[in-house]
Length: 84
Image (cartoon, rainbow, N blue to C red):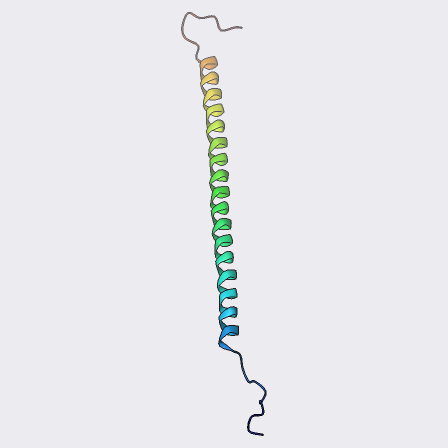
């Protein structure tokens, strides 16, 4: 009767270590994915800013060209035909 096994209570050290290793592996994968998503998000934001800047530069170029062309039509240099 003294040698009877009583039901085990709790977890063994190996079981706890396996759970800790599993959590560590999943955590490292999650952190890596998070950093990749963050990098991709910053790259997308930078591309969007570059595209907006490109559009603004083109718009400024067109507006300044139109402004210069309109000014030349209003005030042609002396001695040149006006086209009328």
